[in-house]
Length: 177
Image (tube, rainbow, N blue to C red; front, side, top):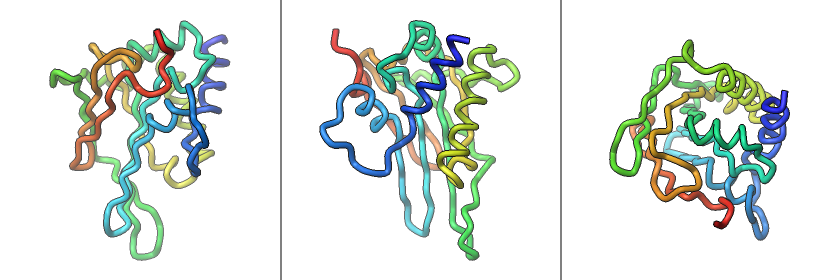
């Protein structure tokens, strides 16, 4: 129950903002950094979302441990069809690697630990409700984190939709030691 409550709070704070934040600090910096939007020519749009624990100042120890052990990514690649509707690619997969190029292990959905499965279901529902078409098109992938931690020195690289997107860590908004 504590994990669900923590997830609910985290999700409320994790929605990508449509406007630029004024003097962002802490969780807001982490939220801004955790979402990558790649607006390409011909109405092609890619979004990458890294669910990281610094996105909320109230992340529980359980939540921190979960998101240090697993990388939960939301990926979406939408293209505008001639009728003006967003069509999403469902076949594309993503690969995640650490700073030294080590490929992170992608977990099969059937093998998600219960807490991870719950987080993915909750996050997916929230994204569909709050982001409309982009949320509908978002798929969630879970990787074993290997040596990648949001608040430790390193890098997470995500190869998706013909591009490699990077997150340098520690991400902005991590607590200062």
